[in-house]
Length: 239
Image (cartoon, rainbow, N blue to C red; front, top):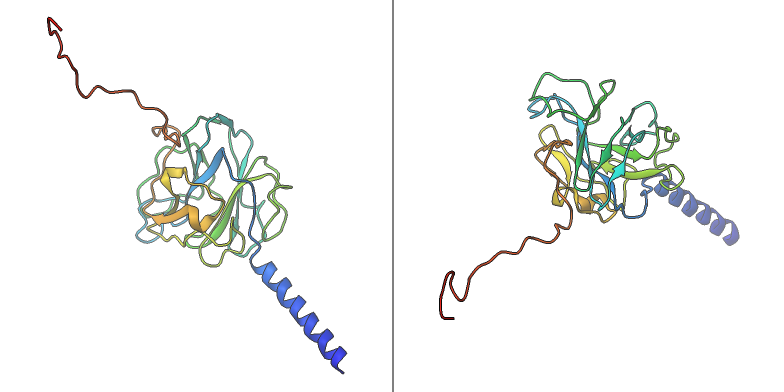
């Protein structure tokens, strides 16, 4: 009957919508005014890699110091649900405005130069060089076994889904796919934040920066005045 056919079509439509939502459920959160993930590199030690280890770089794009002691970085494969097994809890640290923080995220491989002095390191797992998900969490509590954990209820400060197959990202699209020779870098040296991974990141040569790197305060600030001309001239008389 027509009623039965309509019911069947309606059920098929619902199933299709649920499947689509499960495949790509964008993580939404308020724009971060403080610490963000500013660089992701998973090709360390691989063929042609410029660096011998994977790394994630953090950056304080805000105007106030942020205590990140006890926060964690948690990684999952592009379509995975396991976060807590691939996690590093950050050591005692406070990031000043414009300051970077470098975290080694793999064992040292056979190709590439050593990273600059890292601010934290874990060597028990490797990140994918082309697609994955990395979350910055404001505690050491493992994220639930979900493809795209709720950022509000799980304390996710920032999240980057990178590569064409990552099924969780901020905004409506993933950051571009990096490679053995490229990293995903947040634009404007870490200052850009639109809550959309595709808009905020670009693939380019890795550029690992640590807490000893010169600070890069977003928004610049006032510059000291300079004198371009004097009238009358210096030491003039009878003026």
